Image (cartoon, rainbow, N blue to C red):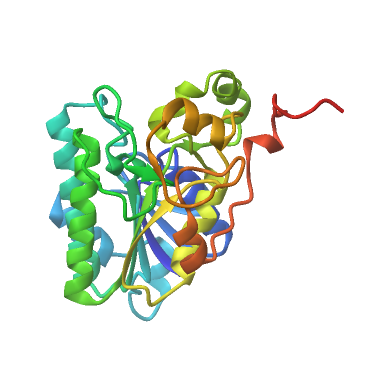
Length: 301
């Protein structure tokens, strides 16, 4: 596929973009900062500028395409570009940049005939991660039907982007899939970050005790590109287990006392439900911090 990938130089994007390129896809990284990966084409684009966005999506991806009899079109757009959190710039700029860039990408992509768009939403849409004080889920596990009522500018922008994406899908009939991505973890971060998480599970409360390995995120995006015909869908994206050593029962008792539990859960099962991605995309996460670190709760051998 010829893929227009926005934000391919970011923490999550660089792993997903290179994974897709390694599969043999032609990936153009539309970003303000180059990725500088030999298998990915860099293109500097300000996605908050509608003219730049249209021009980039309608244009060539490399000098090699000059030798083709006619200019090719993009088969898919993967939109990861964003101000990635609060407190990096002003709240107003965060919201404006994220909402405007997503609108521009969706409008340009659909008007230019792209029939598959995958965009990054966020776990923050559930209103827990960046809340002032403490917010708890209305029920467990948190699935895609859980209300999305955030109070911070970043999560507000992601909810607005989901509404925008759904509207463009209704207008065009294209497949547009949103990914409510949980806390992105690179493989080297298990050794760096998780010992503290295992010692103090309260550090993971804002992430609903979940996480997503970049390798599993990459494979989920791959599945989104491979599975057609779903129309508009949003998917929670996480690994299958908790990001702490405490069990689900222990976490429920300590942090979620009185919160409704809607289905039985396994000993270490994520509270951030990934059943929908499993069912519709055949998503099967493969990685866990337990592959790298010893479980402090495991019996001695």
